[in-house]
Amino acid sequence: MLAPKFGSSLIQHSFKLFSSSSKLNIKMAPKKVCIVGSGNWGSAIARLVGFNAERLPGRFEKNVSMWVFEEEVDGRKLTEIINTDHENVKYLPGRTLPKNIIAIPDIAEAAADADFLIFVLPHQFIKRACAPLIGKLKPGATGLSLVKGFAILPGGGIKLISDLISEEMGIPVSVLMGANLANEVADEKFCETTIGARDSEVGSDLKLLFQTENFRVTVVSDTQTVEICGALKNIVACAAGFCDGLKMGDNTKAATIRLGLKEMMKYGDTFYPGGNASTYFESCGVADLITTCYGGRNRRVSEAFVTRKKSIVDLETEMLNGQKLQGPETAAEVNYVLAAKGLEAEFPLFTAVHKICIGELQPEKLLDSLKNHPAHQ
Image 1 (cartoon, rainbow, N blue to C red):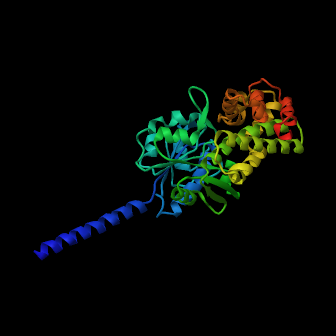
Image 2 (cartoon, rainbow, N blue to C red; image 1 turned 90 degrees about the vertical axis):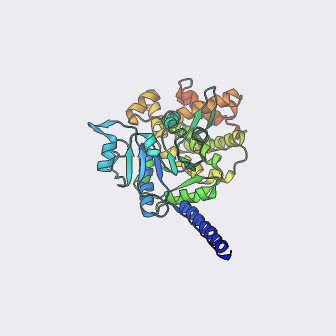
Image 3 (cartoon, rainbow, N blue to C red; image 1 turned 120 degrees about the horizontal axis):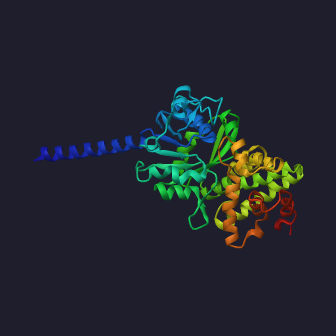
């Protein structure tokens, strides 16, 4: 009677060892990464992610799929160009992409079995583009949003893009925002970024996936503040562009940036209470605000709006190769919320930018919103 008992114990013990080993292997299996989007910023990020995925084979699968909205460039499909020439000639010309970045035109195919989905496309396209992924993602998958802006609710109002993705996809979503002009990141010029992740283990994985010698990552748990900074700074950048177009000078532009930061912080306190004020002084906050107000597309197009007397839509076509400007859209979304709650007077800079963009206010009137700002009372 001892042998069967001993044999049974041995079998049970072996099963436990096998079970533990299997769990360990599952936990330690390299994670598959998918980049959802392939514009200027998405392609710049692909350089970082592709590099790290290849050099960390124990943590990530070597090949990184990138969903590309298919279009033709000089008679060739963009996916074919990326996979053959390893360059996104339309949105990031002159910079090579790692050979392990695989361009795929079908979003469901690109995201199949992905552990990490990096969302990096204009916020107004998120819902439509990602609809084919609903109910098809790998169990346990997690998202990372690099999307700057807010989602517009059907009945009016706004919500965070990370919340929209999380609700639509049924996955947890972290965020990455920072002083990261895409072309400079692609050229490997030194910069910092901020990842907001509630799960510390996910934050650690994402830091490994993105950090390089010249792209330094700080992880914080205050995801909401990280994300609203990435959206609201584009409104302030429009104001900075108007200042430049009107040749108001550096002092006025500095005041615009300071008052814009004050409104960003007030917006966070009003609509997303409980955030950490120190997050505004990470790369996602003041650093991103400064670089966007001096070098970003929202500033550049807003300056042209004043000097060339053309509409935002016309300037997008001429200056952005068909890509959408985020500042005016975000200003409209935020204004809807402020007007509904009777708070426009408490956010005079945000309000003025919106009204200038839609033609209700002359750019010269921006100065009134600065002179009579509540911060001076």
